[in-house]
Each structure stands twice: as C-alpha cells, then as structure tokens.
Length: 240
Length: 358
Image: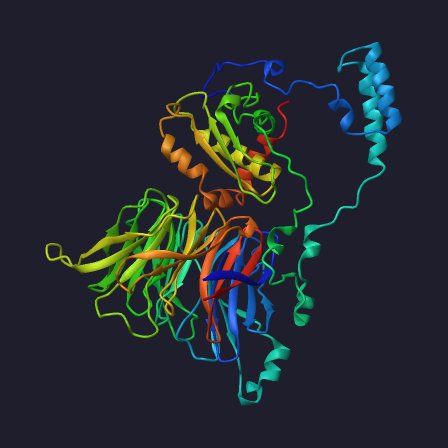
C-alpha cells in the first residue's frame, strides 16, 4: 500500500504504551513448582530485574515442561445431540428448575475485567493501512475505555470504547471498529455487552459508523464474509 | 403472574436467530433457524419435545436468519420458508400423512417428519433478514439489507414464485416484515428507524403509512390479532420494538382524506420501560392479547392491557437472564394443545419454552 490516506500519523513508541505496573509476585503466579519459584526468587535477588536473561530462560523451560501436560480438550460439539439420538429424545435439555440456566458458571470465582485488560486486548491490533498498532496510532486510548463489570459471571457487564480515527474522513474507521469488536467478542466471556463508538468530533459520519458498529446482525453477517474476515484476521495478528 | 422454564433445549453452539410454530393435526412443529445453517424441526408436546428433523445444512451457504411456516395449507402439508444471509430463500415441504394407512399416530412417531427442498428463490442482492407469509398463504414477503421488500405470489403447491412487487422506499436495511393476521396489510421495520405499512393498490403494492418515532433501528413488529373476533372492523394495531430499548403500540385512525390511498396512524402508547438495551423481538398473543418482548439484556417481559383497546399497558411478569448472560433474538407466543406458552431463542444456541402461571 503506497498511498496511505494519512501519510504521517503521530506514532507512539511501543515501550511507552500504558501497561500494567509489574508486580514481582505476579512472576510467580503462573507456572512452575515450589522449587522453581524458590529458584526464581534467588535469581531475582542476584539480578533484581524482571528482564533478567537467566530468569527468562528458566521461564521458557518451565513453559516447555508444562506443554507435556496438555489438558484434555473437550469439543463443544460433543455436548450437542447427534441426529441419531433424536429418537430417544435425549438431547441436552434443561430441567424445569430455573436456576439451572446460570448454574454452569456458579463455581467460578469473581474476576472483574479492568480497563488495562481491554486496552491490552485492543491496542495491539494492527491498523489496516499502517504497519503500526491501534495503540501506537492513539486510535485506542486508555481514558476512552469504560468498563462496568463486577466480575460475577452471572451478571451482565458493559464495555464502552471510543476510538479516535487518525483523520476525520477515515473510511477505515468501520473496519477498525469491526476488528476491535471481533477481538473482544472472541476474548471475553459472554456476559459482556460491547459498545464501540467513534469519539465525538473525530469523524465526519460519526452516527453512521456508530450505528453500523453496534448492529449485531450486520456484524454477524460481516463475520460470514470471507474477504472481510480475511482482512480482520490480518489486523488481529501482531504487527510485524 | 410468573414465568417458569418448562424446557430448555440446546440445538447448536451458534446463535439461534429465529423460530416459528405451526400446529397440525398430528404434531406441533417448531422450526428453528441458526448460524449453523441447519434448520431444526422440533415437535412440541405437553409431555415431551422431540427433534423431528435437521434439514440439509448445505442448501444455504451462510446463516439462516428467518423461518416461517406457510399458513392455510392443506392440513396434511407443512411448508416452510427460510431466509439466509447468503441472499436466497429456500422453501421446504412435507406431506405429513400420505394416505389413510399412515393416519395412525404410531407410524407418525416411527417415521418422524422429514422435509424436502421444494424451491430456492433468488432476487435479493445481499442478506435476507426476514421472510413472512400472508394470512391466506398466497403471498410471501422477503426483506434484505439491500433496502428492499419483495412480494412473491405462489401456487397451491408452493413450487413456483413470481415476484409481484419490489418495494424500495426504505432508505436503509429492512430488518423485519410481518403480515396482518386477517388482512392484506404488510408492515416492514428498518434500520432507517421507521416502520412502513403496505397495501395492494391499483394492482401494485403501495406504502400507505410511515410510522416515525423510534430513535434507533426498528428490529421487529407484530400486529394485534384475535382468535375470538373481539376486534372491531377498523381496529388495527401494531407493536414495534427498537434499538432505542422501547416498545411502541401504533393504532390505525382513518383513511387520509387529503392524500388518496394513504392512512393515518398514531403512536397510541409507549410500553412501560423495562429493557436496558436493544429490544430484538416482540410477539402479540392473539389468544390472551398480551405482548411479550425480549432482547439484548436477556429479560423476557409480558405486558397486559388494562382494557382491550385502551392503550394502557402494565408489566405483569418479567424473567431476567432468560438465556443466562446471552442475548435473546426471538420471542414467540405458542399454543401447545390449548395451553399458551412462550418460546425464546438466544445466542447460547438454546430454545427455551416457558410456562406462564396465572
């Protein structure tokens, strides 16, 4: 693509994008045995930096070891009735107890999603015309993300994201919004209702773009359009 | 009044988009459309629900968005229209009983109901959003993102479809079409925030009224009907639901004296606000006169009019999260052997059947 709509966008360096403050305890949460954690603590004492090369190597090793214990994957389709079963009438049926509908998540602890998580999910999406991320181009910004979530998997939660297109007549605003929606719908649990808006005053056809981005039927149809889905998939890969 | 789950049936992992219900002498058929392209036919009985048939999933290349049973057919025939995002409409049929020998219930149960593809209708430029049959079963209306409504005329068998009119007055996607249950009157709901009413006039179909007031996409609408003939000759009402989270009741007033062929309609009332987000579906029961709505917030709401025709509605029952935390795309009153129930379809791939307890 030689003729960009916006030849000279302002670009933020990747390292300067907002990220969660590193908490050394978090380094120990994810994997490894007690022994490994002790080893890491020792190494951190020697070289007190999360960027320590030795530490990274050990983490990699732990990850590799974990790969050997792959959990069993259960396909969603196995929970569906097969056509052969239909005679026996035993396809998946909920009882007459109302509570059953929400029971499937009952055991999970509350884990609210915060603004940083939404930022991390969306800021690294690749812009459709520049080899840069939406975060680098300041299309997605932390202060323009609202999250209302109590972490209860049985309660509805709301997310509102206001995007800032690079130029006011940017024809790709709809595509960027679609990319963000597809990313969030795939990554977040079903309790989230996602609203994507163009930030007030940043686009000439604000209302049209907003309406289209929040029409579930149009989004569903777009996701069945191979060509469009191809472009979106490219955006969702990392920018390299 | 309370709403309790009678049965929840998981039919697919994708969105349940649409369902339609038809009673025949031997079975109560519920057709279900979904993103997985395979239309399912359920038989709803008071003592059990059975999956009768899964239609060929290769006929449509994209999601099936809408299904509608043809009314007024021979009692032994069930004919279904299905509209898809692949821009086509398919017609399916089944002779429920072939001859007298098969009339007994037993053979019915053994054979189940297998539907055959009868026709494919092409014409729309892109996604078909809704299909609807006129009350006499002679006309089929289809609508699409291409901003048009097409009216098709068909024969007794339902094999041939001739387009009798293409209505192009909506300025945006047409989301939904519905026919009046006893008149040749069609209502179309659109992304342009309006509802248009259409009537046959001088051998063509003309827009006779535009209903404005909703502040967002109008997702669906339903006419008031009556199985007990309580309605007066000129009493026509329509309920509509929208992205603006409201439901509105519209009332026909009179023929417009100044504009030939035009009708005057008013917004009689806005139903008490319950929904927090988009309302996707509405159903007006011809039996109880109650209205049911549901949508993005997953709440199923039932409204009742204090006195029929008064326009004063109150919420008499509501059920939150009726498909868990998923959105509800369709709600429909169904009559299961004399008992009025509600069927809903959600993004969780379930069809839920609800008892209404007085």
